[in-house]
Length: 338
Image 1 (cartoon, rainbow, N blue to C red):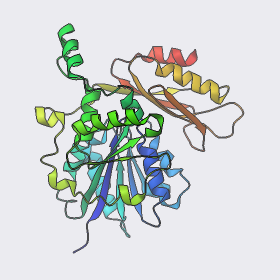
Image 2: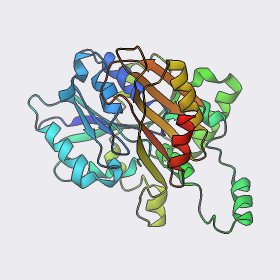
Image 3: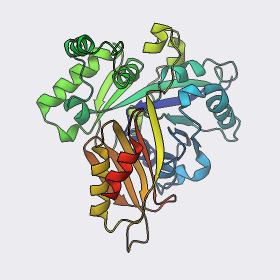
Image 4: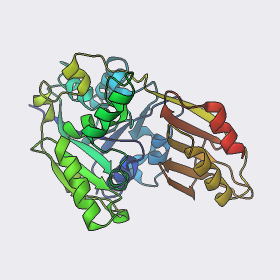
């Protein structure tokens, strides 16, 4: 009987550090054939090109499969399962499959997908890895304050459910086998302990947590968890599963912003930071042109943090803006022009 190919699902909120974690895994693959499935929310792929441009033999374009047709957890039958079947049909087959979900994806539907008849005897979920932005949690962007929620509901009758971002954060934690606390170097020991307490509140009892580093984690920590998570597909429930609802992403929107050439890297960062200040904007990412530079600048922005650096790539001059459904596109564009 042929051994089942292990798969790792990497999930986590927008900008938590999933792509960085995977790039470091590739760099430390030591000959292991790792196939990557990268899912983007919106019409413009970006993380897949970051991975395929990483400079390692293991992440040439033919080993990176990018799905941009909506959130992967909502297109399992149309996109995800055919992609898994395509990878399993390769000769030689990959040694390991790594799936990077969109920051808006629920991991639970993917776990259930591995029970599908065409794949369940050929693959196993080695582990669900949830990357948590420890600095963001320390700043209170995912606080679990029931009293505050109750006060908001009392003040506004229209608030008859929890914030969807908070629910998504909880769902990603409750499905994890391994939780990676990224950006822990940006907070002190007391804050880190508080973040760990918040994470444990929603994590499964069996889940382990580790502190991430800017250099990544050893491959054997992330790959080789041995969870066989698909065997628990019926008990790993999301909020929507528990409430008997269908999951959708009407709470989030994305659009592609065409950006003119920036005068400098500093001016570009200032424009992005200004746009991130618009209420409801969650993340901005992509590549932009900078005057006098032969290669584009990569933009990665989440919350108050804006990272810009030069790296080869395509689609320069186009940024993806992701936010809550009521964001004002005109106001965001005006902030860029300002």
